[in-house]
Length: 112
Image 1 (tube, rainbow, N blue to C red):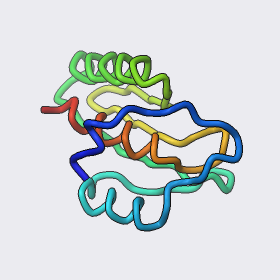
Image 2: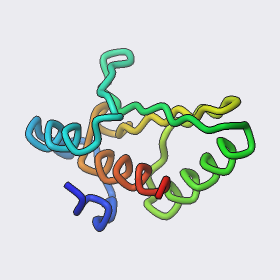
Image 3: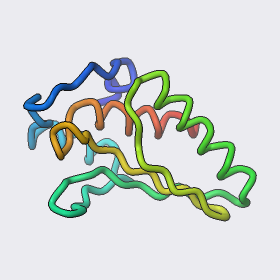
Image 4: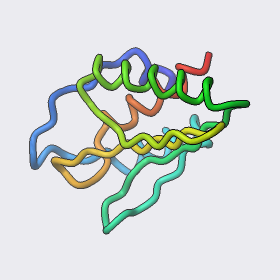
């Protein structure tokens, strides 16, 4: 699913179809560091990125923020010493949309 990094998030409305089980499975096979978690019944994509210090974690957080603004799709981000936790999900559908897979793939690409 490397093509996800070439895609652009689209405006999502309430009632938009969630990512299919096939899309989710393919994404997780290509990006095994991500996991699907549930928070209050809402599925989310979660990944913890590690860094050698706070400055690098903060710089990565800034890059994720810039990606979020460019895609007009915004994650939850927790920045700690040497660690950044990123959670993607679509609030309007209370679940995972293709946009979340695109954004997560692009988040991974920020490391290269």
